[in-house]
Image 1: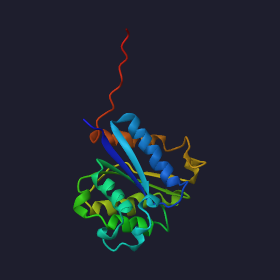
Image 2 (image 1 turned 60 degrees about the horizontal axis):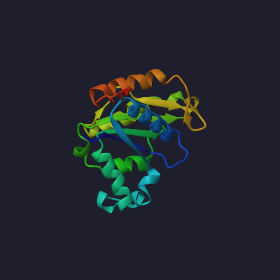
Image 3 (image 1 turned 180 degrees about the vertical axis):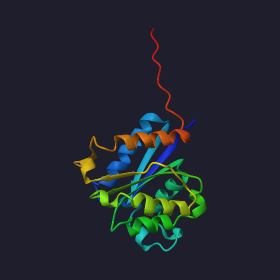
Image 4 (image 1 turned 60 degrees about the vertical axis):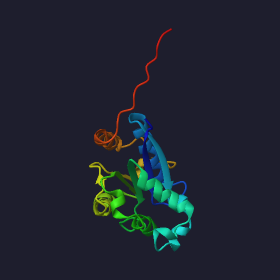
Length: 186
């Protein structure tokens, strides 16, 4: 049996990016506990055709491959930098090119980053309704990380530890646990 796929999509062009670092950190935690393989994409991976695309058929192969990875994921992790209290417009445009039925029932982990805690509800007031429109299965625990939660574009040991554990617990209803390897003495 092949491993399930966790696909992360972040709405940032920047590299390094705190949003990408958060998604990568969460994906590594999920991979350590559950039998999944992960892939990580950001808007750089989508490429320049996104801004010119009125319809999905207008995307070039690079962008289409990312959209197809999102659609075929067993679990989707979305991450957005907070821009003026919401997600960036090109991130929303990419999501708009997906047919709502293609995400129906898909488990989705919601994450966002911002400068400070005043934008922490972006996951509840912007991302959760967006994926609710698609009838996706957003997990109860969402993760918002502020600048204080990072050191040199890496997730720092922080106040988020309990949130990460809650998120991993939420995934217990969705993903099979990773089997522990058993060593045999000769």
